[in-house]
Amino acid sequence: MAELSTVARPYAEALFAAVRDDAEGLGRWAERVDELAQVAALPDVQAALNDPRLSASQRFELFAGLVKSDLPPAARNFIELLTENGRLLLLPEISVQFNALKLRHEGSAQAEIVSAYELDAAQVDTLVAGLEKKFGLKIEAHVTVDPSLIGGVRVTVGDQVLDTSVQAQLAGLRDALAA
Image (tube, rainbow, N blue to C red; front, top):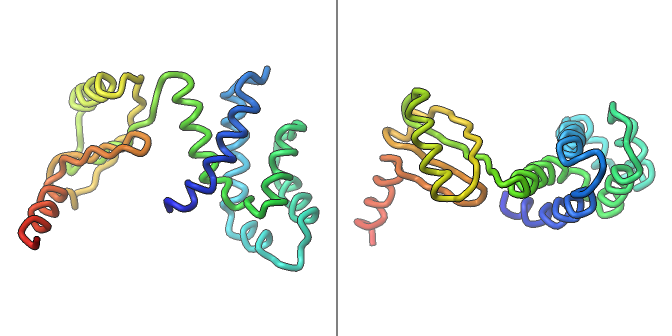
């Protein structure tokens, strides 16, 4: 997975730099990139794009034809670049990174909070307030429950992970005893 993000990052950064000051706004571009990623994630589309019998121009026309919304020239150029470089299937990861760049530009970030137990609104608010203070960003939290954590929470903000779960503590103890 790290390899995909490494390959996708330059494309996401280049697209972000190209459209950052676009009149349509970053929100519209984020929606557009999400739509492209959804099309690229479809199993039938992936199979078709991996067909060695198709030329790059045929892949481009096939993919562009599957996108429902109108594509401005910048989006068509971006798809063409990805097609020529054989990177169309990276669109889901490019979308993730583009959205992260958009949030960072807006002074916010997404936090994936995984808890062993259901958190009430007050607990989430307290956790988010602490994260905002730590990272200096406005945090948009997405909370899920994973009982395998046994207790505690695991928080992922960008590429940083704060893991205070019992599962992580037991793994650390196991590693310390094995050393």
